[in-house]
Length: 161
Image (spheres, one colour):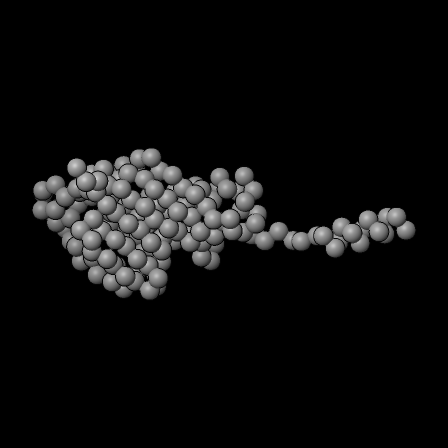
């Protein structure tokens, strides 16, 4: 009878671990952090080979996407974001290199949302002339959708001098 009471007690308190709860496990957090970091890098790294599909794979492909530029330009939605494709894919635009410094990634308790901060040096050329964003503050929010991390919001700004 004692064993039966223990079994019923265990079953009463048993709750299966959801995938989001499992992500709170320190070993899983490390893996998730690496996936988020890779998505962040792919937002910039795609340009070296002009792999637009790589970029689009890490950006929310819907109206929830938002991007703020240093000149206060606001891009709302994936369709508006895609309008820059003509510039990026133009042969006059050339990605030279980039560096992400001081990357800090944090997760929500559910581990389905991540936010980040870093400083970005994005070195490019337009018609052979420098077209750089240096010491750019870059913040963003990613959401895990269908087991994949996508950027839903990003904000770029320059420090005032």
